[in-house]
Image (cartoon, rainbow, N blue to C red; front, side, top):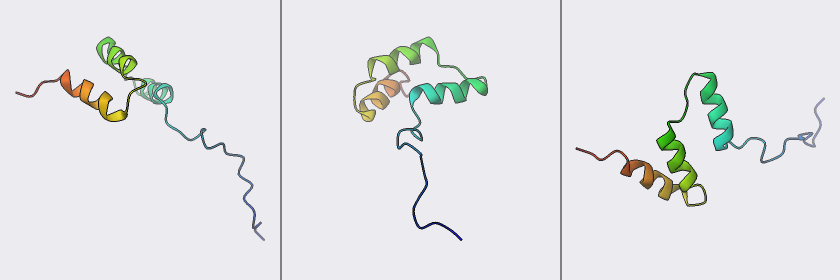
Length: 63
């Protein structure tokens, strides 16, 4: 018999993939941010995601 009410004690923020959590996951796989990328992410931390992507793309000019 199943209950009709959810017994989830899961906090909505628990499932979010934050930069810190993403770095921990990547570290397990042997991946780390370069100092240059860490600096860019720190500079764009409080900006909209598109601004961060724009700053990253600017570091890799197309030929």
